[in-house]
Figure 1 (spheres, rainbow, N blue to C red):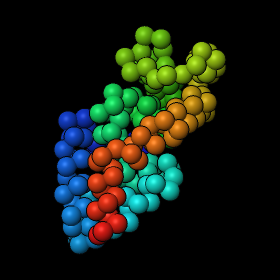
Figure 2: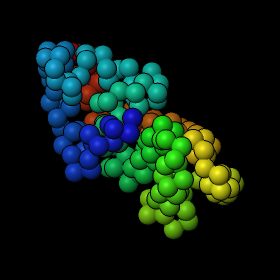
Figure 3: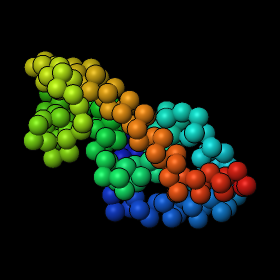
Length: 170
């Protein structure tokens, strides 16, 4: 998932809304080599589960753009950073853990995510001996926050509704 982060740079996100809507005019007619093309039922699968949305390159990019528009992009950025962290070599865990903690969890973090005091304290304690699992609790809390709060709003957004309407009439 972390590599997808680079595919969706902030300045490209707003353009993605429009391009996905345009491409949906030709759903199912794109060449297989076009990685950004939408399958006819892809947007419809996103309503089935939050996991379906995140596991789709187009879905993840569109959701990320939605979060940018709502000024809460730090949630998906933190989630993806944790996914990447879990795959980190043991020799690099400490440095990467500090970077993630300082960017997203510390009280003065530039992209601080909304975590309760207990979760922050547990995560800070985990930082004493960083392992691949040290952000699991915090990541799970942010995943739940996105799933229960951001995801339903995304599914009601005009951009998603337009995309799914075009997919249905495909």
